[in-house]
Amino acid sequence: MSFIEFDSVSRRYQTGEITIPAVDNVSFSIEQGEFCLIVGTSGAGKSTVLNILGGMDSCDSGNVKVGGRLINELDKNALVDYRRYDVGFIFQFYNLVPNLTALENVELATQMCKKAVDPEKILTSVGLKDRLDNFPSQLSGGEQQRVSIARALAKKPKILLCDEPTGALDYKTSKQILSLLHKTCRQTGTTVVVITHNGALSAMADRIITMRSGRVIQIAVNDHPVPVERLEW
Image 1: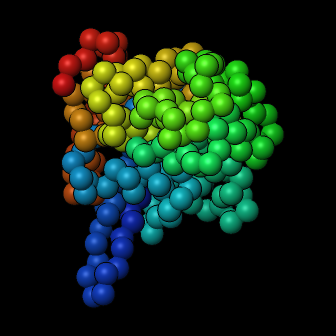
Image 2: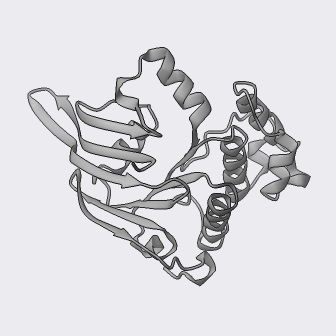
């Protein structure tokens, strides 16, 4: 049994009399500790898959298993606990609280967890030892994304879900953030799932799931991932 399993998962949205199949009979698996990319253009269904996996959206049919648990059958309270303790989220536009410092943003997340990492320690580990007392507006885009990564990692999640984490960053900073995510996966054993439109990143991943029009069109396993530093796009 794989750590993450999607089995014939579908999600449809109703707009008036029109039914939009955002995810259409999707099946795939991800092993524990893998760095997985879900690749596709806008509208491919990547974000919907990520939201279903993270417990922020539900599926209309099929099953979603994480660590042997059927996520789609959890009740409201169990789903809250799943999001709180098992899943870390990293967003394209950081989603930091603007009137809290970097340290306070991470502390806010750790207050909801049972076995959180020390906020100062985790910020230091992502290279922000000297930026603890800075507010988001005083940080560069890359630094803000590092805070959001630290906030997610402080929870010690089993899964790290990243929604276009470099979409708002320049080329050099994007490489730094991807390297940090890859390093986190390797050093902590956290399963990392990144959605992206950039197919050039595929060489760095253990598993690449390609989507188009709500369907999985290809799944590839990479036995020899390339270091982020060697990627060009």
